[in-house]
Image 1: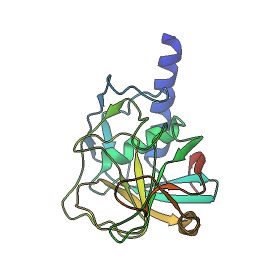
Image 2: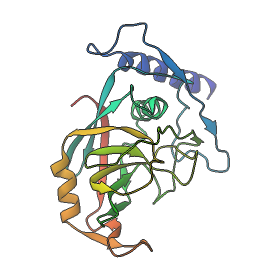
Image 3: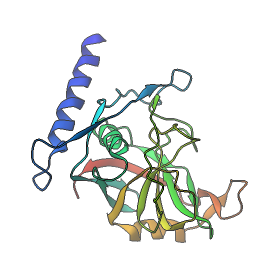
Image 4: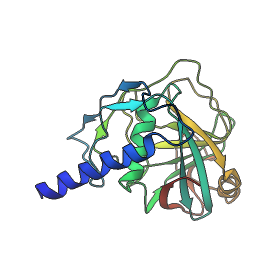
Length: 222
């Protein structure tokens, strides 16, 4: 068991190094920021993953494509934004296949909130990576169409949950912004068009997607 754990750690480290400095990114001496990923033994990992490295690059971008049953959606994660630790976390989870074969449990389409929420393995807000990390916000965040941001269950509870804005989210600047969708918003629009099963007390336009939305795989690049 110990050898498997060490091998997994080494593979994650190697993968982060591989994708940490794409050809268009900053020089090798890119500055970094420290991150703290705190275990949550009362909320263990839904799937076996190791915590990300305690540092994150603060330059460059990395593209991640989520292969939904509606089609591919590519998001460009911005390491140079306000949330480099959140970006490093998503990179780590993609490397470890955490999001593969998962389902997006929440879809909303109200005037206040128009988002697709993914990253929970079991159900809405249940099934994270077994650790948490702090919010990274400047206070100037806006959540327009195409924004990709961390979801959470309160301050400092970030893990694997994230949301994609398909219209606009009129919410406080309390959610760490990872980047933006650069390809595939039409797939998100089709999810919305298929409707919502109201399961949330916030109203009939907030609940589960009427047609299940699933992530087959998440990979780097387009």
